[in-house]
Amino acid sequence: MSALVLALAAGAVTGVTLGALGGGGSVLAVPALIYLLGFTPAAATTASLIIVTVTSAAALRPHAASGNVRWGTGALFAAAGIPPAIGAATLAARLPPAVLTAAFAAVAALAALALWRAAAPEPPERRPAPVRPARAAGAGAGLGAVTGFLGVGGGFLAVPALVSVVGLRVRAAVGTSLLVITVNSLAALTARAGAPTPLDWAVIAPFTGAAVLGAWDGRRLAARISGPTLQRVFATVLLAVAAVMLVDALR
Image 1 (cartoon, one colour):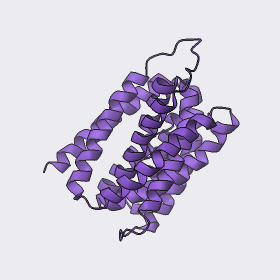
Image 2 (tube, helix red, strand yellow):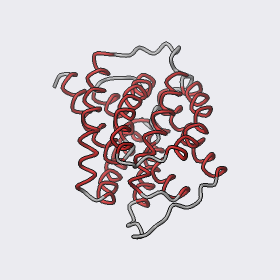
Image 3 (cartoon, one colour):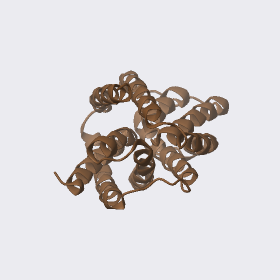
């Protein structure tokens, strides 16, 4: 199968995941870039930041139009994550590929567990809790560090954090996480801009285009299938990805 077809297929899956769940696309994008398209871990994480930044920004608009973005909360999360994202991106460029792969596998496994926990049914009249700036900023800083270090948007962690720390309903958390992902990914990408990492734009461009189109379909999918069902399916996929990458890192 040609690299173009693989890029389009992987991009579509990444976009659908991001649009439906408000995150998680990059957790699939990085392994796809490494194992299907031959990128090194460093190149894959940088390319993933490009893909996720563009896709998240495109997916944010319809969620905002539907009133599912809490701008103040998202801005607080994103602002707290910018410095850690830049610092972690600088550190990641100096680490061996096996370390990055093992760290990615660990985060993917943690994300799967977080998604399983977040898949519990919501109370019918749940109200958002008052935002505690210190807790929100701490969670945002952690998300920024994960974004910069592993080249992932952090939405797979942002959604559970926005639900548990802030008390947003899942749909609002999904929309708000896209704002956080866009800002954090752009900050981490800026930090990596000067790194001598070769990027194959013949793969990245179609991958990104397919992801943007897939994100629109993902939002429609989320409206038809319950959030808990989507989260459990994706959590299962994440565990499989984590297992494959951990075995590869330990070879």
